[in-house]
Length: 131
Image (cartoon, rainbow, N blue to C red):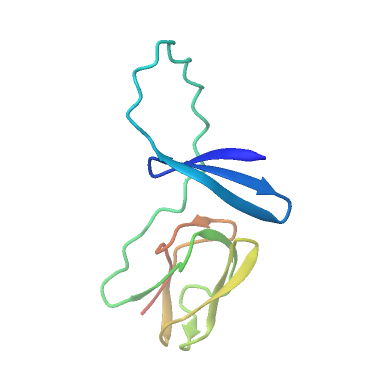
């Protein structure tokens, strides 16, 4: 099969056969004349994605434990007031079908738990603060 592929305003003609692919020729795209046909009606907008947990600023004198990646909180392993040691498991984050364990970056006591089981978080979202 032969395909025309456009990458960075350059057209590539590619021949694909089972187990191999060959580049046949390349051409530069020249500015096209305006289309004579009317533009089709726009499709309705998709429903917005569920909102992520809101970011909360850490209080002075506390160390935030932030999410290293977007995902869903599977479990929170600490409670407010609980003493934690550096490297202790704080929560479990599911991202890309993998369970990621999030550990305390320092020793102290849990000042705030900012997420709950099932919450959706983005990269950098504070999960817990340690004082």
